[in-house]
Amino acid sequence: MTRAATIRTEVPDPGLVAAAVRPDNTAEMDTRVEDGGVVTRIERDDTGGLQSTVDDYVVNVTVATEVAQHANRHTTHES
Image 1 (cartoon, one colour):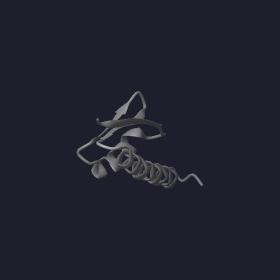
Image 2 (cartoon, helix red, strand yellow):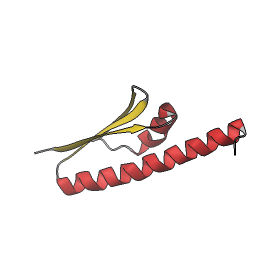
Image 3 (cartoon, one colour):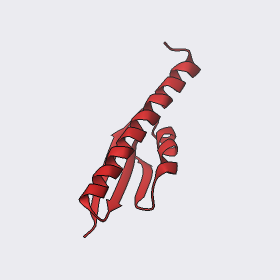
């Protein structure tokens, strides 16, 4: 039985964040921009594998979001 999770993340620049995390996707993952957020569906054969993949993905999205926000502040000269 396949296990699945769908994660929706609201971020200021969903296209940029989705593009940043998409290269790390495995064959069991699909990342897209939907209604202004990043939506990723992950499917794995077992619960432990699903949990590990979700954990890694959450870290990647967090880092991508922080980098995008930092780049935006730098580009717009905000502090």
